[in-house]
Image (cartoon, rainbow, N blue to C red; front, side):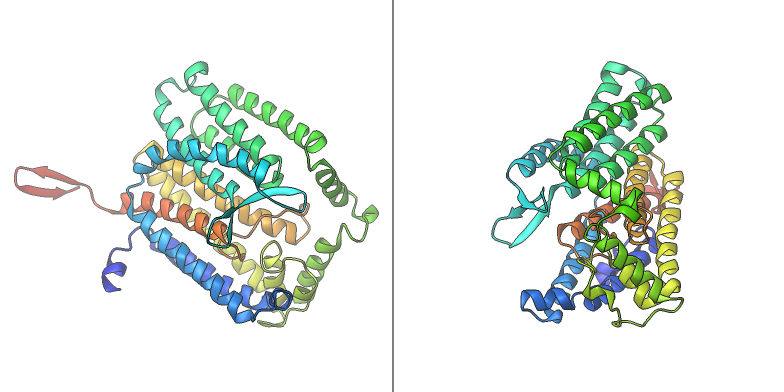
Length: 382
């Protein structure tokens, strides 16, 4: 154990953030899974232990990925993109069909389901960071630089959006931020945005889930006209937040967890605010903002363009997802299925989130460790 701890590198504040979010996750999941345990005929402790095992697995993956030199992820990104696009297609055609959407595929022999969009986020961000860093000298070359970048963004966007529009929009937004940081011209970025808008309109009005998307947007824009069934989740989420007050009802005392369909994942923030009050909700927001601050410091200090773009893309992805989840809980956005990173109960989403943290830590490790120049037999640290 001491040897493992001595090999823990990278930004110590990010490690602390991971520990805080994991502890809060255990408290929130244990409190909010009573109804789920009853429906499944299992003890709440069984679900908690399963979730705890997933968190420990995530931390193990984080440790492994942070020990890998982040430069290796440039080569890995090409392999991930080759794997990701066929997997997304397979998921759309043959994936588990739940709530009119095919987002998951079963992992044989494990009893677990795998959401391919989690892999797609990691694959696209690393691929864009690699491509943008390597094309800096001819970044405005339409044929060799812009078309491959635009093609990868649009293909992944449409394949995810057909089943999971909210995740696709967040990933598209992160991609645009990376293009801006990567010095793509405003004219070319406008073309990507136009293509994305056309694809978005097609998905909303012509896609297989068009009725669901239109209904959610209408319910959000006109809550006074919405059917009670359509606004059920958002209404009870608001009740949970309103009744939490400043100090909350206390750990384990949530009542809305018995009414919200997913109080341990999609609406875990509402459960946290109900039990820990406004203070708990603000502290959680502060943790994610502090995470973004630490990641921005890493981006500004990274010596290589690839490391800076990689850390920027992954940190933007994590924080945008966090605030999207919390925005839905407080009624600032239509209902989506976006989990709260490292807090919501989940399977592979926790693992991929942990890998993303590990890659960010790998970039920060490269900054923290002194570089050595070998002069004859003497090693001199810079």
